[in-house]
Image (cartoon, rainbow, N blue to C red):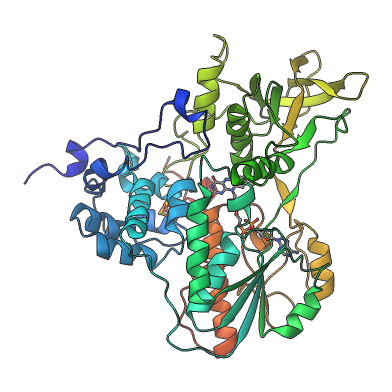
Length: 502
Ligand SMILES: Cc1cc2nc3c(=O)[nH]c(=O)nc-3n(C[C@H](O)[C@H](O)[C@H](O)COP(=O)(O)OP(=O)(O)OC[C@H]3O[C@@H](n4cnc5c(N)ncnc54)[C@H](O)[C@@H]3O)c2cc1C
Ligand code: SF4
């Protein structure tokens, strides 16, 4: 028998465009069509194991070994069919998902995982390029009406599932455009917005209606909306940002990331000639450590900042999976994001630094000039455990634009919606729901970050699909739509694993 493909074929990833070229535009950082020559070989590395842990680790339950086999056999039509059976928006997850499936790939125990996310993306892009992403209009209508509040990935997935099931669905969105954080959070260099627009066009032609510029809770009371429809899905996200209450926080030039990123996206969309919060010619300091912080770095790079530094209060993560986070856990390891690669080339690190990031860095205060503009960030070593600044370790970084990317605490105005509908908030300030996504009064459901707390696109889509199944069951008594997750489901952690034999 010939050696299996994973022994002969090394793991290859999608090629990025050269940093020198890509920092001058907002296009996707990857080389167009870079996957085509390699994807068949990469898919053939899948062992098609009897117990596909990758499939379990994907919140959507994507049928990964099945589409790997179909892609390696060049059967793209069936691969598209298998992928769209579980994922409404694979062109988003194929670009944005941190791929917990790859951490759980059985090959990853002692070799390089299959490039599952890239294969998913190749199938998704093939479907759009070859006319296989056609609108699916319902064969019959039920006469039941559903209002979905919020048009991020959770609201869109719920709306698409319910429209395809025959219900009349209207999505209410407070912003001027549909898409949630896919539209006004994540920058174009990671998700070009024409990809979002064509998906929304598909939803429209299937029958989903959209009303933008309507804030439910103020423009339209939530209880009044509930009386107008047979079921209501709240998918309002969790965009209430965490604050940094240190001296100087009120200085001019200190902004929340989500005051900065949406404006940059609006410039790319052609709404504004230049952002009112622009990094050009400025010393930029980003405070925080997640995707939002990385997006601030990549955006400031493209706006031609003088330099960009980042302070993360967490200790520096390891570069390889630590023993404490064994397979199949999605381990917290240090990634070089595309934004950090760009910043690293523009501002090469000193010998004592790895890149623009300083770890275990607790911000102490912001220094300002007499006009009240920020001039420096003072930070100190964060004590292990307490994260309190260690006395005597204080340093200063020049800064005239500071961006706070410290995470989110729950839905904006969650209390208003909860009050109007008579539903509860959980201990973390998210909208409370039961194990079937139902909240308080009859016919009200909660999906996505609004219920789960700040999370990921893949969880939001899974939430939207599962909440849609619950709504359909409530409206019709049928049990036909797929429900990939329960509200209580979480990613597998080291604590869930049995103890190692001693
Ligand atoms: C900068 C940034 C980068 C990220 N990068 C990644 C990534 O790379 N990969 C990943 O998996 N995840 C990423 N995330 C997280 C991901 O975007 C979210 O988990 C996901 O968008 C949540 O989807 P959602 O539909 O629940 O909510 P959202 O996308 O937040 O959408 C909620 C929508 O509801 C609307 N809304 C709120 N209140 C009302 C109201 N009262 N009336 C009407 N409309 C309302 C909002 O305007 C918004 O459009 C990122 C998040 C940010 C902020
Ligand atoms: S959605 Fe994410 S977890 Fe699921 S298969 Fe795609 S990359 Fe993997």
